[in-house]
Image (cartoon, rainbow, N blue to C red; front, side, top):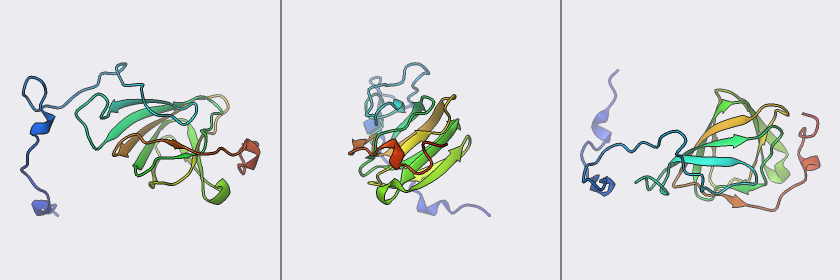
Length: 160
């Protein structure tokens, strides 16, 4: 079955994305030259490959997040941003819900969607291996840190 392309606009003005040369072209951020000046949630190392900070993008943040073994973020949310994540390597857990009594676990190859304004805690389940996520947000990398909860209050965290 052929997709219905009639709902997509096939023309438009993309002149706002012109490079200094005047050309509208893809913008590549080379490995090792990502922007490390991103908001964080207490120990997560975030670097952006595509963001308003260093590309013409205005509605997208796309980056890599690394967590050391045993890491857990502070309680936070991402404001109005819709967040998509992909576990590139390692094992992850996200606590959420009232008093953070609920959680989902993920492994390499799993995808996750985190709704806007949802308080949560991101964790690396491994005590010996790093966790690496690929993360995208619209409109940008919003991180709002909240009052934290103690490790002992997170179900199944201490005995993982």
